[in-house]
Image 1 (cartoon, rainbow, N blue to C red):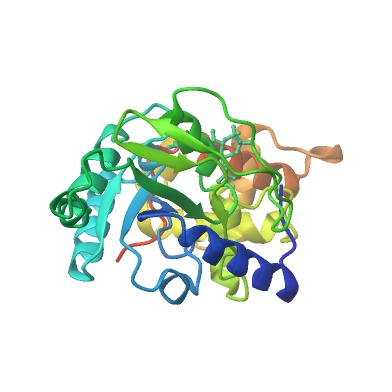
Image 2: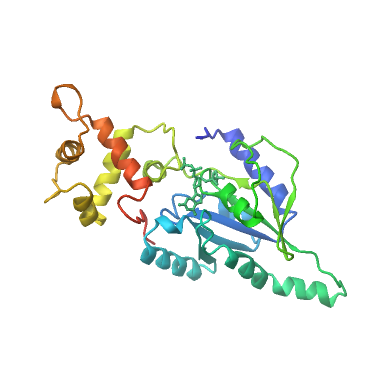
Amino acid sequence: MTIQWFPGHMAKAKRELQEKLKLIDVVFELLDARIPMSSRNPMIDEILANKPRIVLLNKADMADEEITKQWISFFAQQQLQALAIDSQAGAGVKQIVVAAKEMLKDKFAKMAAKGIKNPRPLRALIVGIPNVGKSTLINRLAGKHIAKTGDKPGVTKAQQWIKVGKEMELLDTPGILWPKFEDEEVGLKLATTGAIKDTILNLQDVAVYALRFLTQQYPDRLKERYSLHVIPDDIAELFDAIGKRRGCLAGGGTVDYDKVAELVLRDIRTEKLGRLSFEKP
Ligand code: G4P
């Protein structure tokens, strides 16, 4: 679902998140490993302030492994611990609890020193933009299916704590934040990776962006997938070449550019072109 974010929605989302922050010890900031910057809320540092935070590079199974490693170092330089995870299959997810416990060990040691014998479980919240995988991760950590709240800031339900083992509790409603949508390239990257689905952007514009990116960064994958000997410089010629190879034709045998755009974007989102990262640190 694509949300139209109006200023009122953003203010409300921010307020709701700030309320939740009062209840929790640690925030898991969920980003898309393929586009860590474009899938980030532009005000996140201000909103989270000094709350302990772990960055989770989700959908790492679809991202370029080498580039994900570079992102982890990039965040480390900013004093932010980042973990690569795949919420769908579960890879890396166990490490989240381990990292959170380690991060909060001083706080809990102080509680113990004050004589609190049975320290409560540490409390966590997942935050991120729509479609980054928040519900998938909540379900993965919960080990069961938790109903998804509508991706609408302001649509609230009673919050509950989900037990994650003995040592952690997770709020069952994530913090939903807006992306940096006023930047056109951010919008194109979100659409390319499928974060914006029923897109307000033109499909062909998104595919043009994606194909130019692939031509520069992953030319061999493009050649292989669409059996191209050379990649034409002219983008219309590239659409033609792919369309002819893959039978994306309209009446009279002309290439149907919308069909080509759909095909290329589907191929990207279903990993037919392999693991792709659209941003480097
Ligand atoms: P949200 O709550 O943040 O809005 O996101 P949600 O969990 O609904 O996840 C959005 C889509 O991303 C889902 O696909 C989900 O399966 C997929 N996804 C989440 N985490 C991962 C991951 O680590 N790896 C991969 N490969 N996929 C992940 P969906 O429901 O099938 O939607 P669609 O985008 O395929 O239509």
